[in-house]
Figure 1: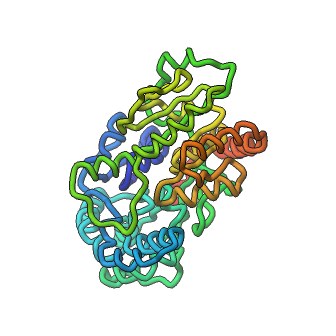
Figure 2: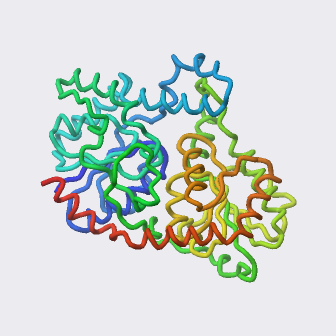
Figure 3: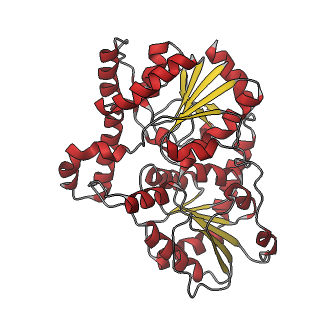
Length: 403
């Protein structure tokens, strides 16, 4: 079986695909990943063919005509909701043509039996329909927030241009379902149907171990871990390297967020705290001894021993915490993270931290550490995830879908 996989966005999108692609490659199937230059490194250690042919993907770049309209909305929540709707509508807009012009010839040459696509990739949907092969989105936060009804009108316009069948059913975007690593009772998908669900692995990056200092952390007090993920630092570095396109709203500054987090955990002097900066420079002068600041750490491994995870709310991070039964304090920044934070709170897995000050974050952490309910609920999520079949089971499922 030949499997074509597309990856956009941040490295987290690729890391969510790795366990599935490894299982396919191990079973002897040929896997080709089509991505952009920034994400090639994610797949470097794996037995897959990587083609860095896609352009840099920035959905906000397509919002230019709507910026003035969005900025007239005073309420920030309504503005964020409208921004989300517009981003979804533009995903299948005319601007996908450059991506489609690259992907379709590559796919014709490769002749895939099935396409696994980034949740944001509408060019892969059209490519699959042109070739007459099944396609499924892989786990991503965007898949969770996407409403197919918002995408359908523009997608049908592109179908008509290509001479494809125009569909009335919004779920024609996922005719064979989707891949996820979360059981249905804990699903974060707002509009998509039941998934092909498999067990989240704690071993994503190959040959990773915790650094030796981890074994020396005090174990007679709660261990708190804080991180801001990969997408926001990526946007931050991109903004620093080139002139920023106008946006309808300002995203939180990762440096400010890290500063607030460091201020908060400095107050948790009865805990041990590890803060990962993802390479964002921060001022560590005066950081107390119970706080260790590092650039990166193997997050899935560290979470196995963590009592509370302070996170930006990316879907990868949330799944990893659910897999290890770790309660969450979610400090969202953009995109699906606000919806993820609300869902975490609705499921009882932790708190959506709305007070972004150091004092507000510290108070939320203390409340969560003192409350046994989130820990119990997180353990329930962990047990539910352990009932899912291992990722190797996806191989036979995809073989069946591909016929």
